[in-house]
Image (cartoon, rainbow, N blue to C red; front, side):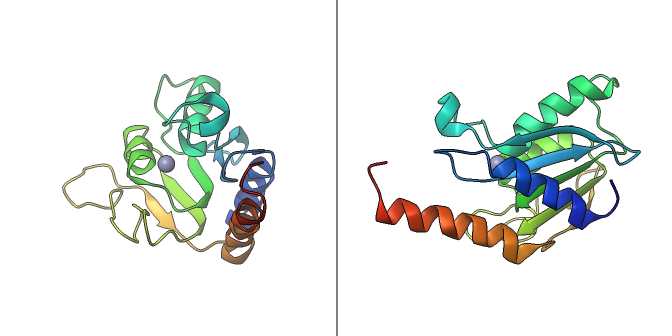
Length: 154
Ligand SMILES: [Zn+2]
């Protein structure tokens, strides 16, 4: 797989399977660009406040990558700007690049509300590219919340 757009497109495909959960998807690409893991937000399904797409993808990628827990050289692509928890996790995982779609001005921790991953006090700081396929990623969320408002009991 080549290109950040393709990576975000793969994350969008993962998000589409989210069911009752807010449709956010993530993929982790290995240093060679191969998809190591894909996951989507499963907070409702798993009853787990930490079951964000990024965390599930990082865990699965670490199992697949074969360098213990380290994901050096890997890229995390996600449809929405990560929250503080996920931003912290990707720094701990030593991910080299973060690519995301929609900016999240209310909770985003990769440049919007906070910038957890590029804090100068950290010695590991991944490269960041935001706003990739931003419109598609935001549209998926808007469609989900529009349906929620129309059918709140479903
Ligand atoms: Zn998160």
